[in-house]
Length: 512
Image (cartoon, rainbow, N blue to C red; front, side):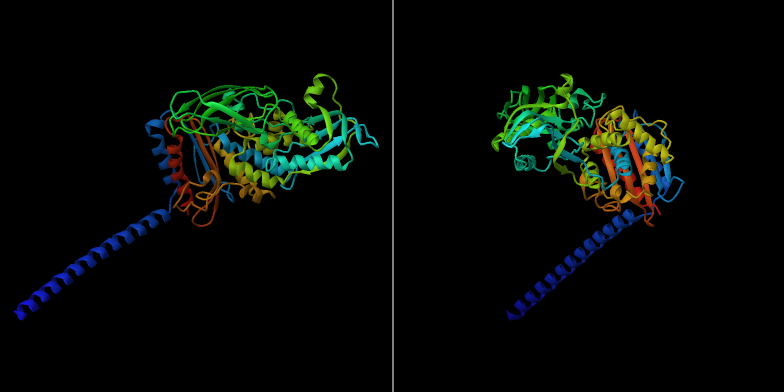
């Protein structure tokens, strides 16, 4: 009996051992396969690519049904070479969307200087009596600063109120004037659409912009699709603003599909579209109707809260209509400076800030011609490009940010601008302003897990029917390549197309 038990134990042990060996072999094979796939993926990622590989990928892309009516342009050139690496349809003018910001910021850095700062002044005319009465007007003299009050509007206004109080002013018998005269009164370019101008991203460049010329509108919605959403409030409060609320509820996962319609200087705003059902305190952002007037009215409230009497508020535009505006014989009371232009450019390209780009365009015009207008800014950017020997035929600019669908340029022009900037003193400021693939800004989710991640820097552009990328990438051998790719008039999903354009950018990084 004991021998039988021993035999049984022995057989069991042999069986268990055999099972363990089989399990070990199985796990070993799985590990080998996994390692092989990892190595293969790495090899594929590190594979050397040729210019022909890029062109094959472009032709493959254009063979798709959704791109049969599309136009695609591509140009890539090593920054230390005069010979392009690869190009496709590179001299056809296409709409660039936000990649146009590269043109504007490059020119701004070169014309204004990377250390340029915007200056806003508090000024007054007349005299201050011994009793503390200003027998004259107080002016907020805008200097075209797009960042004024962006970080903390209340802190800025408290600081201004303190400066006025410290001057001994207790009462203002004249007018508190928001002076935006450094720029033209025309806030937005003529080719911006009605669907854009009332929204925060369609805010126009004012000589006295404040808090990014934006305000918030809050809604609540019942948990049912297709009924009217309830308007709650605006932050901050805007005097005389009239809102026609036509917003309805969409599905709970529908997101923000509400749009604000309204022209510059008009205080009537229509809001249409949908917000998610069940949303509470749902926020959308609009553009201030009159930034200079809002700025003056906000300061007026702060002055009154600080015991300083101030009864009348206006702007240079409104006073000009009445022939009552003058900028002679003023005394500077206080100055506010922006951060350096290189930091503003970083925000423009990293966050794709339309307003900041439009301010740079008009400030280029003011610096060169003393006329802070959209038209003069475009003219001066063209002059800058010509001075750098860049052919401007086919370049059509209608704004500085790319929001206008009338804008057009070639991928060759865009890439050559990037190449030219390599030799400018301001190159580092432009280069480090561009989002990093897989890491920052609008490129944060692009090219992840590829050789382009952390290596490629580019500005992206996207409007309905338009996708574009332009920037720099280092090849396998360390050569810096300037590139631009634009697609117009495609069908289907823009995000899907962008993923396919990533393949072309990765192939650039794989060049030898």
